[in-house]
Amino acid sequence: MTVQTATLPNGFRIVTESMPGLQSASIGIWVTAGGRHERPEQNGIAHFLEHMAFKGTKTRSALQIAEEIEDVGGYINAYTSREVTAYYARILAADTGLALDVIADILRSPVFDPHEIETERHVILQEIGQAHDTPDDVVFDWLQEKAYPGQAIGRTILGEQERVRAFGREDLSRFVEEHYGPDQLILSAAGAVDHDTIVAQAQTLFGDLAPRAHGTAEAARFAGGESRRVKDLEQAHWALAIEGPGYRDPSFYTAQIYSLALGGGMSSRLFQEIREKRGLCYSIFAQSGAYADTGMTTIYAGTSGEEVGDLARLTIDEMKRAASDMSQAEIDRARAQMKAGLLMGLESPSSRAERMARMIQIWGKVPPIEETVARIDAVTLADVRRFAESQAATAPAAMALYGPVADAPALEELEARRVA
Image 1 (cartoon, rainbow, N blue to C red):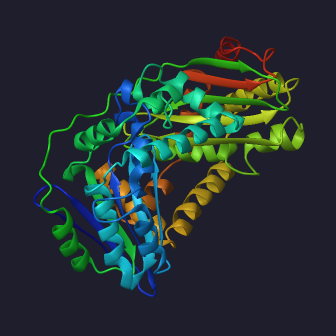
Image 2 (image 1 turned 120 degrees about the horizontal axis):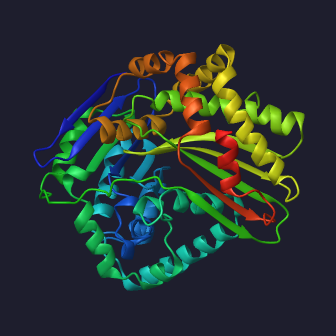
């Protein structure tokens, strides 16, 4: 399997990987613009635009878009994150050209029909309402907001309801004009694909796009703080975020291994100590997330209102203990989990296409898998312990609580426990 890249004269980037033995392919366009590229009055527009992707173009109705892909047994979808918006399809090899043509039509010729805008506005408002009714989802939005207050990267991707109610056709068109220039588009395809054929079609579909000036996202500033929403729920939802490295930081892989050892599986410290030994919760985990210029180690647990205090304090204690007695066996186990997740995911053309697009966005190239594995293998026990010490004692923190949490410890108490 060989990764091949190309760049059109206007800056449009293409990356492909042929996977012998497959009869299908995954192909899509990743736009290097998401929630953190919105101005305050635009909050939620990137997600709204993604919803409008399949609502009709100058040459295809919404029904025709769906039928053309599904008539050949394919699947088409999109998603919005804080740094990218993706439009992608999974199809059989013979239909790769059709899928790319449909995606190009979606991106280049949307009509933003007023009736469809109103229909989709209602759908998004329902989605926001559903998120608010899902405590273990909405608590992460509040955590992100406290970690990065007053910043685009801290605002919810869905947007606030009053913003969504106000968006019109001009708002959607303006965001496309501002952020969908050719050098912000990455075409990625993996599976039963031919590089030269895809490049030639991309030249036809996107080669005439004129380069345009565009701004950059505001630099992230992790501030921290506490968000507490008391409500009569069955469970108390508790989430803690500690500032971590961005994905270009040399300690990125150390952070990943640390979070896996701390709370990444059933054998992890938090799961064993807090759930298995003490029975304080049903669900607890830690994960490491990263952006271009910042990152977070996030810990989440759902427990009873009476036990959230013990759970929070024990979590801090486990973080402190990890700085001094994290073992080589734990590091090796976390390393194996990380490599297995990476390599197993690469058996899917969809995962490969997404990874290549992200690598092009981050590095401007796709590092060989062997290079990534080598970076994971290079992380030492000393590296993880040093990182654990900073996470336990000095890195800024944010906390969000939701449910019967009136008596839960304040962030100030936990901060004092971190440095005690």
